[in-house]
Figure 1 (cartoon, rainbow, N blue to C red):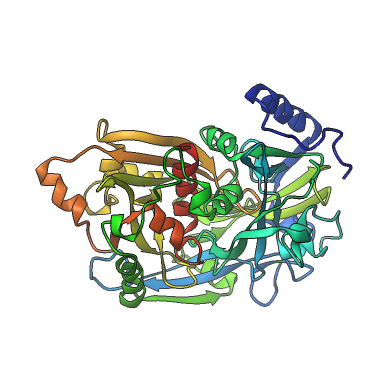
Figure 2: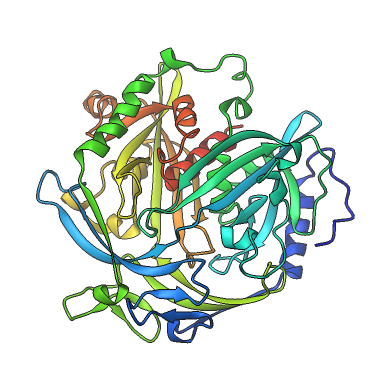
Length: 464
């Protein structure tokens, strides 16, 4: 890529300038994504041995089968067991965000990047968003720019955060990405398609639907808390004594869930979960899906995108039903706390992670009684509190097709006496965790799932 003629900015530019730049990127980075049958995907084949959908190189990822058994969510009844397709990607991807200070304000270097599953084409991705196959050149395409800041000697940059974080546990088996934030004092040019934006501006852009992609949101969640302090907070940070629970008690909730709940995972040949009339999954000419249309389907796409490292390729994508991820917030002792739930997902690496207060598909909106998720009605109730954030956001477009999740954050008003007990002492697996404690958890991997991390980014950056 050639370097932009625009010099490295001394300060963030205005909204109008950004929108003009984004429109120009959309005009210049044209692409086509066509849905094609899985049987006709160049470079992909159904293995003769297992029926798994695999790439001819043996790299990238595969679609296999999974049998999961767990007693999570059964109310103490017998464990549930089911089979499903699952994405298996053994390699750890790299999500790197480069930061630099201009005129006393931190900026991050984002890229307008096309992903085949994006609902609207281009979204703002981290400085580097790449699988190991990408940045090591397995695809034989153009090199991934700026990787030198996140590998090797990092070109003299200073690491602010570095952890392995999980991906969607219902769709991946044991998938993690390395989330790295590096700050530099170097003069770093804006290559074509990249732009320096202040953290304040990114917070404003999060309020737009489907603009800041999932990978940017997860890596931004790991920023150290001192960088996220709003006006008046930097010199008086909340500490351990300000939280309603000690940090040890918070960790104990997660450890207890990992101890109490059963989760067994057996990777199966994809052929086995598609065999026989009793299986809810079937393979058709269009893809792989459930007979009742629930959960997700697996489909194939053919892509042409001149601005990507590889101009043409084909791949499978997982297309889930729309979802809801919601976070309840309360000020306890004057300190903002979020209500997290330790939850088990089929492909989780370590049994359980903290997720948001509510995480479900939109079909749960029609359910009543025991099938309705805890706190969903509180989250959606008119007048329950102040809505801090309510947008539609996309899941990662490199593996998922038009995956839409409504992200909702509500700060509760003081409840009536009848509701106070439930909110003060929520059901098992739920815990009120202060925002500083959440940011401490995020310094480590496998503590917060991707939905909770994305909501935390929205909560902290939009409040600046």
